[in-house]
Length: 287
Image 1 (cartoon, rainbow, N blue to C red):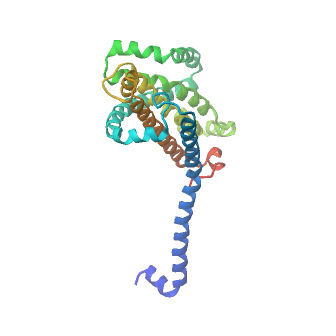
Image 2 (cartoon, helix red, strand yellow; image 1 turned 180 degrees about the vertical axis):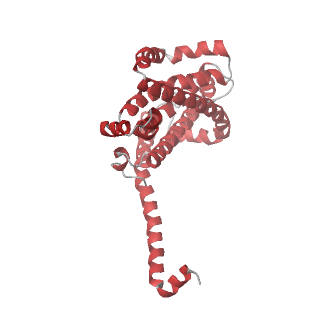
Image 3 (tube, rainbow, N blue to C red; image 1 turned 120 degrees about the vertical axis):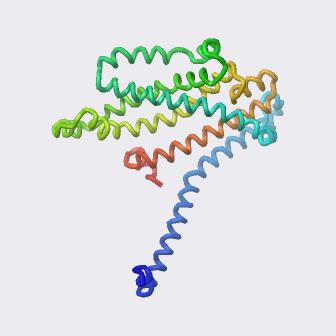
């Protein structure tokens, strides 16, 4: 006889209590999900309801501002084609985001440890950031072609600077006593970076990801808008040129849904990664 079987025979009431606890836990999880998402769903419902009502009351023509019901009627038939183009956009945005994150994180580490690099390189990073990427997009297409490369470049260009600034702040936001303790026990610069500075920078990195994920998609879409054979940006450019309002709003709706999904994903990831930080614990904890 196993330990579990012996426990069931001797104290069946505890087993029943355990089942009740498990059921209660699942119910609590369901309630938590409802409480977390219903305000957003309610907000969307109010927004689209007001939009629908105002357009119908003012009798605004559909070729100027369509109603949400008009957009949805065209959205689902176009969805398979839009998803095929979205794959191209996501590929460029994802690669550009990874490159932007790598440049921002590595640059921040170098600047935090060597101030001379910060004084020399940070002004250059600001200067590059100030270049209007909308003006740069046509030039990149002329320089490096119509394939993924200019879209990846724009996505990286628009994402690296927020990562750089946030990571510099995060890597320096360490407790002075903890830093002094690490130095006292003879920790190397690498150990201080990994065990102290990196942990302190994670909340800043997670907050930054909420922004740069969307920026990467914007950068890739802008690159596609100015010249591409594929992608959501190409769809927006062609439908706007031909005044196909249904197609234009369908592409915009898909991008809005993608943005909402990214927000949910990054918030969930933040609760798992930096559950110990005040910004997470004071907003409801890990659940």
